[in-house]
Structures are given as C-alpha cells and as structure tokens.
Image 1 (cartoon, rainbow, N blue to C red):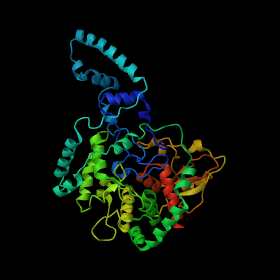
Image 2: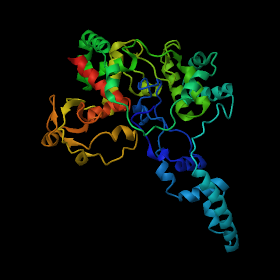
Image 3: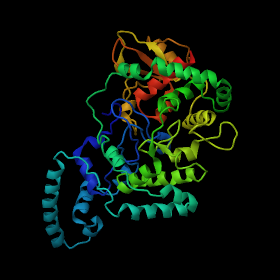
Image 4: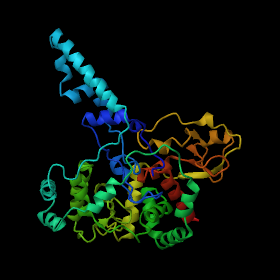
Length: 441
C-alpha cells in the first residue's frame, strides 16, 4: 500500500490506455520499495533519478511535448491504424470522406474500450531474447564503457536469472491508492524506538571527531547522518543479501524497466572495477547496497572517501559511509544552520483554508499535497502557530499536521525536502528527523 504518492493522470484508464497505444506504456524511473507494509526502505535514492522513492509510476518528463504536436484523438487513431496524420491532409476529397467514416468506426470502438477499467500490462520476461543472449548485450555495453574484461568475467560467472527478484518487482503496486493516509503516530512508534535511538547515540559518541570533520566540510549535522544510517541499514546490521549482479541483470532482462536497470548493472561493474569483490556487492533485490543503501549510479556520483585512504568504502568504513551520506545531502541542497523542522502548536480554531497548498508537485504529489503553503516563521507566529524549538523568524516553512486536529504538528523547512530526496515519503522523512533529534539529545 502506498501512502503519500499518486500521479493523478495515471488513475485514469483512458489516459493509461492512450499511453499504451502510443507505445509509451510502462513505469518511469521511480523508486521501488523493497519491504511491504509501511516501511519504505531500502529504496531507490531519488537523487539518482529525480523521482520519488516510494512512487513506482511517474509521468515521463516528455509527456507534454509528445502531445503538443497532435491531438490525443489523432494520436490514438494513428496508433490504431498505422496511418500518419500528415498523409491524410493531402488525400482527395472522396478518399478523405471514406477514410473519415472508417476512422469514426475505429475511434468509436477505441473510445468504448478506453472507457472500461483496465490495468497496465506487465511485459513478459525476456520477450525479445533469452537471458544468456541479453547478458552478452550487457557485457558488450560494459566493455564499451571501459569496464575491464576481468571484472566482467568475475561479475558474470555462472550468472542466471533470479525469478524471486522478478516476483518481488512485479508485486510492487501499479497505481497508488487515493483512499486516505494511515496515521503517522503508529509508524513513528515502530521506527523511532529506544533501541534505535540508543544505538544511534553510541555511533554519535564513538565517531565524534569524524562527524565534526564531516559537518565542517558538508554542513550537515552528524545526528542527521547517523539517523539516515540507522534508518537505511540499522547501522549496518542489515544491508541485504541479494547478489547485485544477478538481481540487476535479471531486472534489466525482464524488461519492465530495462533502461534503468541496464544502466545500474553497468554502473555496478564500474564499482566492482574499483577492486570490490563480488562477495561484497550484495544488497537489496532492487540494487541498493552498503550502509547507506546507495544504487550503483549514486555510488559513482556521490560516494566519497571520508578518511583519506583512497577508497569510498560504504560497506564497512564508518567515515566513508557518513561522509557519503553528507555529500548526498549537500548535493540535494541542505541548508547549514537550519533545522529540518520543529514541533509546533496549532490553535484549535486555526483556519486551514487560508494556508492550503494550491500547487501540484510534478513528482510524488501526495507527499507534498499534505503540506501547507510556505510562509515565514514570523508569519506563522502571527497566525497563532507557535514553534516549540528555536528557529529563525525569517526561515520559510510549511505546516504539517498529518493526523488531524489536536495531534502533533510540525513546521517543516527546506531541509525536510532534502530528506525527502533520500526517500520521498512523509513517514520516512519525519521519522528520520525525529530520530536525529533524539540521537542529538
């Protein structure tokens, strides 16, 4: 069950069918949750794809451009008949009249079909070639991008498709629900636990020098970095046990998100080419690995050496792990000196209509639709909203009271949005922020 995200256009059977007829069917490069229930991690990191980590389907960025050149009806007809729209414009009148009658019959049938509920078809696995043949294509691509033959050989030895990975991929929800949101409080009770808080404090105390250096360099508080680590892999105690080469090759071969996973597989081999053995390269079924659960493409772009030994070892090295998370946050726009958010009181007679958010976010819209519009803390105070912790009057913030009147509320800053870049879920981001606050106490 999805909680925070929905792309409204994809809830329409008509638009979904049109998209399929136009040859544009299939999910975008959104994130895939690897746990069921309310837990949203480990997941694809949105800094790699600019898509929500908890929304598996997204409107492609080129959606608007593709539909600018011809009407939807023209495009549907052309897709159904194979006839180019432009050629009809120059046909003799008699032919155009006959064609019009035929088009009306076809279009009427198409629109009738479009009005019926349907779900997007899942492409069959290996619809165009068997696994071994497709693996040769992947290997050639890796070779062309500079991966050594020795790495290609050791990462593909005895490689076979993992049908469990395909099963997990296809079990992801196809269309997010719009039936409401589960309460946040029970989720926080399960994820911001005394065990996780105490373990985080031990990490914070045992890494004080390292974290101070990282904070000076990247501007991100150590407590936030530790909270992300605790949330993603329970401070390294569970990082997944799927062979990443096998998982990513399987997902690329399956074809449902072929371009995405083929890219990640090649990037994984580039990681392996740095000297990491295949036995180290294990993680979630969807390809995330290491203490911070980075995808291979994220590792290549943002993993950094935190202790000066020449390697960015996010598998076992604490300094590298924390510095890499900090680099991720800096890249996503973390603002030094601002909190992620503060607990606040909201008057019982508060006018929510006056602060409703009217903009629709281009991705992960259900996450952002729950937030108010942005006002300065000074403006919030004037409306009777009182922060319960220090925050500057000029800081811009959005009000969030997820469980309704008379329940906890927060003023969220731009740094909360940075946490959402790691995993676009209010449940995730709020739990990370609160865990960080508890760790820092």
